[in-house]
Amino acid sequence: MSNNICPICNMEANVMFMTGFFAECVKCENCGIFYLEDSISSNMSWKTKACINHYLMINKEDNESKKLIPHFHNNNWEDGIVDNRIIISEHEVLKLLPQTQKETTQKILLNLATRLKYKGNTFITYFSEEDEYLFPVFFIVNDYGKNSLFNQLEETLEDLKENGYVKHVRALGDNQNSYTLTPKGWQTVEIIKNSGKLIADKSRQCFIAMWFDSEMEKAQIMIEKAIHDCKYDAMIISKKEHNNLIVPEILSEIENSKFIIADLTGNRGGVYYEAGYAKGLGKEVILSCRSEDFNDRHFDIAQVNTIRWDTEEELYESLVKRIRETIN
Ligand SMILES: [Zn+2]
Image 1: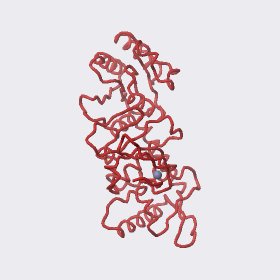
Image 2: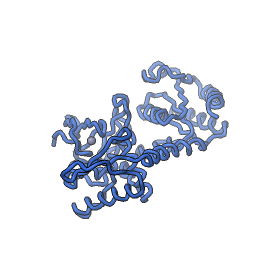
Image 3: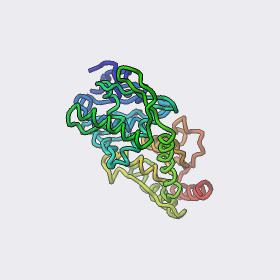
């Protein structure tokens, strides 16, 4: 099933069938680049669509070429990083569904801010089938029939207007209307983003990103010890505890952390992803790497000051020193 319509936002996009996967690769100006497995796209619920849309919106970066490409599926696969793809099951992505009215409003505003990009840019309603493109953006997910979906959209938009987040810009004729975020809407987006930073500022948590392998067990213990000895709390989501890489959980633990330690030994894609995500959030990232892997570090961060270690004791000493110097 290949056409040139983005399956998430219904806009024109570059959709390519991927031989080798039963998936299509979508390159969409709104949503970015992602893979969508046939099994998920053939019968996608509004809930799944809204959650994938939200994942894409909160992970949208200007430089698409550098990041891992999300690959959404509902197969019995282990989630994680494979080559340049981050494998995300429908089950995991559905955890992004907002649970309260307040959370729904916040997530809609984040969606709109990413979609609009800049102040004064507008989105359009048509009072027709074309409005379907807005369902995921507004978390219109409870399908009691077509009419109910349109009614929910209208009501949600009314609600955002009444609360001063969205304003009507102009009537464009033929039932078309354009809307934009108000200054209060943009400000709220700013507050939501900053509140994440505020939590992190007060946080004593340090997220550890590393290769979970038996040969790294001692290194893991020493990293945790260094964090504790500097009076911070270590947060580690190890593969032993979770068979599946829990993507939204990892991302939110990184968000809640004051800083992260990423050990690059073993050159794991996931570690680079987590380090990059933390850096993108403006967090301090302390990098370390065992000597034998030191020269294999990824080009992008090869110039970042990385702790080089041979023994775990050296790693401990260097980490304590670095944490005391750079984290206040
Ligand atoms: Zn799209």
